[in-house]
Length: 45
Image (cartoon, rainbow, N blue to C red; front, top):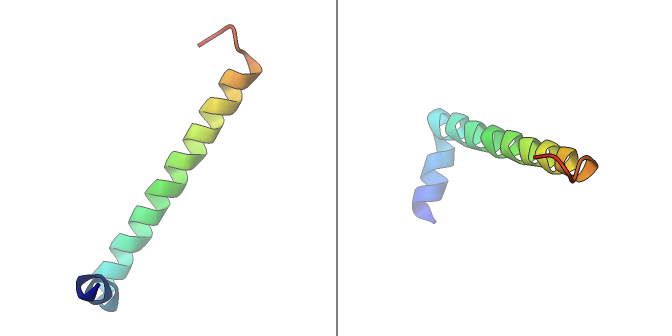
């Protein structure tokens, strides 16, 4: 856990954490869109 605290203590660590969180949020958003579209049209893929 020491490595984790050192990562967030530096500005670069905070920036990389924000980037990782943004990528995760966008991935979840695209998966949600894909699932909702496929749920509306079960016959098409």
